Image (cartoon, rainbow, N blue to C red; front, side):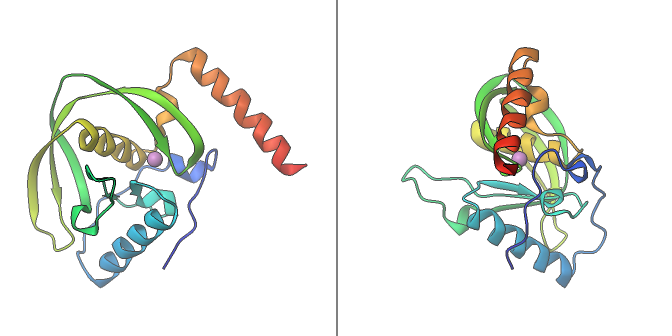
Amino acid sequence: MIREVLTYPNPKLRTLSQNVMEFDESLHTLLDDMYETMMHKNGVGLAAIQIGIALNILVINPVNEDGEQKKEDLLEVINPQIIESEGVIVFQEGCLSVPNVYEDVERFKKIKVKFFDRFGNEHVETYEDFMAVALQHEIDHLRGHLFVEKLTYLKRKKFEKEWKKREKEKSR
Ligand code: CO
């Protein structure tokens, strides 16, 4: 089922998500809904809080070298913990909760993450470049943060000004 995606500045996006305790049918339904919603919105990643569910769950489905987004590349991540990080990468990010805003953000280039899959199996994997960036972006959501908070002061001010203008035009 496609769910509604919350957008900035909805205060719910600032919620601190909690760990998943039961790897049951309702978790599987939620993961399936998150995948469907992400694809429907043409996204490459989604955190549960973006559909209003404050649980440590995220999905990422990268676009491959042929420009295709295949379900076999879907990564489902539950209760993630970054246990190692190194290097720096600057990458242009966007977010389904902050539509039509794309800005450069600095992140770790490489991270080692401990997480669980939908069946409760533990994994420890290392990710680099796009996948590392996407994971850090989604893990930030689980902690109540949006990528626009990481912009430089001037860019942040510019973003807030443009956003207000856009909201005003919408309500007209
Ligand atoms: Co996002």
